[in-house]
Every structure is written in C-alpha cells, then in structure tokens.
Image 1 (tube, protein in one colour):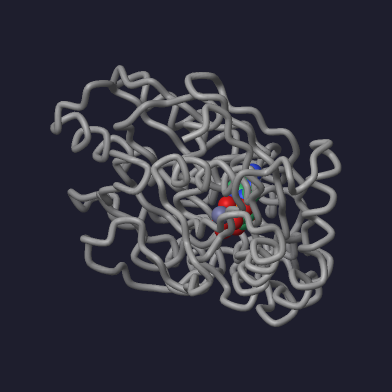
Image 2 (image 1 turned 180 degrees about the horizontal axis):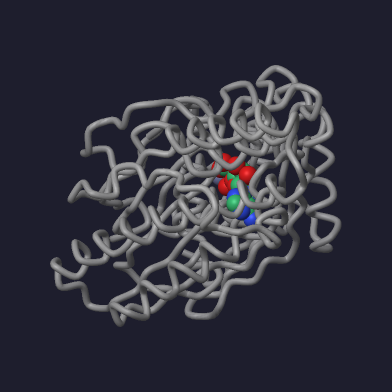
Length: 365
Ligand code: KG4
Ligand code: ZN
C-alpha cells in the first residue's frame, strides 16, 4: 500500500451536499486539502423539516459541481486521486443514491477504486482525522438522526453501549425550534436564544436519567416544551421574547443534563474494560453546541478521562469525514465493486439489537 493516499469523498445522506479531498502520509497527521459543503436549508425552510424528495433532487443537481469545486480547491485532478469514497448509508435513500451513483460514474470513468462508507463511521472516525486518536476510545455520536455511545475498537469494529430509543437530540432541537417559531436547523437557533435565557425557569423532564443503562429518550422533552409553550400562550396570548429564551435555555439544560448522566455511565462501562487509554470523544452536529461540549468536558475531567471534540465544521455533516473513513478502509484493503448499494439502515455495531424509532434520516441504527 502507498505511503501517501489522497482520497476524494462524497456525502449526500441528509440535507448537505458535500465533497472533499483528504491526504494522509503514513505516520503523519492527515490533511484536509478541500472541504465543500452546500446546504439546502433554504429549500426546506417553508416545510419545517427536510423533505426527502426535494433533498434527493438537490443532491443530484449539485453533487457533480461539489466534486469539481473540491478538486479545484485542492488544485488536483482525478489523476491525483487514489480512491473515491462515498456515503452509502444510513440516510435518506434518495440522497444516498445520488452520491453513490455519482461516485460510481466517477469510478467507472476514471478507473479509480470505489469505497462505500457508513456515514456514522465518518462521524465516529473524525477524532482520528482531527486528533490522530488511536483505538480504543469511547465515542458519543449526537446528531440530527443518531444518538449512541460506542466504543471504537477499530476502523470497522464498534461496540454500542446504548442510544436513543426515540428521537435523536438534534431532532429534538429541530422540533423544539419549530414549536417556538425559530429557524432551522434548530440546534444553532435554540443555542443562540438560550444565551439570554434562564435554564431553571421550566422544570422539563430528564427522561430515563434514573435507568441504570446508557439508553436515552428525547421525544418527551419536546412534548413537555410544547405544554409549557401552550400554557404561556394561554396566559399571555403569545410568547414573549424572555419566555422563548427561558424555554430554550431550560430545554438545552435538560439535554445537557441527560447527556452528562449517561456519559458518566458510559465512561464507567468503558473503563471497566480496562482500555489501554482513557479517551472520550464527541462527534455529530449536536457536538457543535457549546454548553453540551462544556458539560461533557466537565464530566470527563471528573473521571480523569481526556476529552476530544472536533472543530465545529467537522461536527456537522461534511465530506472530509467520509474521505477520511474511506481512506482508513482503503488502507485496510477494503474496496467495493459496482454492486455497492445505498442503504437506508446500516448499524455500526452489527451485533447489538436494532434500536427503536426513526430519525430525520430514516430508521435508527
Ligand atoms: O451531524 P449532522 O450535521 O447531520 C446528521 O447526521 O444528522 O447534525 C445535524 C443536527 C441538526 O439536528 C442540528 O440542529 C444539530 O445537529 N445541531 C446542533 C447545533 N448545530 C447543529 N444542535 C445543538 N446545538 C448546535 N449548535
Ligand atoms: Zn451526520
């Protein structure tokens, strides 16, 4: 296998069309040569959520252009690339198909190898791209479609300790924002409102916090927020600015508290296995939330575990993580042929039973 690998990555599993080029010289830090992300927020804005058909069409229209831009920005052509990595699931099937078809076309035209990547592995391996982490590490993946604790033992070896049984936290942020008339994506809107709010004003529940496992639930939180909102509207005839801020702050506090309790448990389970190092990493779009990052860091400090969080641009969906995961798989000799199919569901830990529920990106792993 070559010392230096340069991989083109494609991502289109939800509402961001992305392409990136990542280069890795063996035993050196990886380099992101380009990372293009074209969002679709405007296209879905009037629907209050991601519309799968609109997303798929937009991906199909934009993915080629993203690839061109990514190569241009990296000052490379396809001849400089060693393999093409593409998200092959899990996600909204139409979007995943757009990326997979584009990658197959590029591969057929250039003769370059094709590597199908699990979107969740992209998030889960990001701390290796950004911080050069070695295995095993404990990972909390929190995004718009997923929420799980995993012990990352290898590039294709993950053990799930627990996860959400209904909504993912990002989904709860998005739905709560919608209930409060805030723009999508909901996470950043709620976070911005929460800055001036009182997190103690509303006693929102901490679902499943008393259960002695790592499973979580976020759908009740959103329903509790709805009830508080309706009570305020009935009392005052509408929501005042301070009410909205207090609701956001109380909601964010509840999510942070639940994640903190469950992270403590997950760390205990991870340490019980006597790992060669004590590292906790957080990944996925919700990991961009400053309060959640700070809360998780405090938990880690109290347990003497190192805390790693990727830069914000690599927490939300991007193709650099797909290029990197593809690069890791390719180094291990993994290559797909043209029978590579788009998968709506693709659990990282294939031995654990399926989780219930379904997120904004379809069925949960
Ligand atoms: O990882 P990601 O880009 O896509 C999925 O794989 O789902 O995550 C998107 C999710 C959205 O639900 C969005 O509201 C949430 O991440 N998010 C945040 C923040 N930034 C993005 N949630 C809370 N606070 C944020 N700052
Ligand atoms: Zn994602």
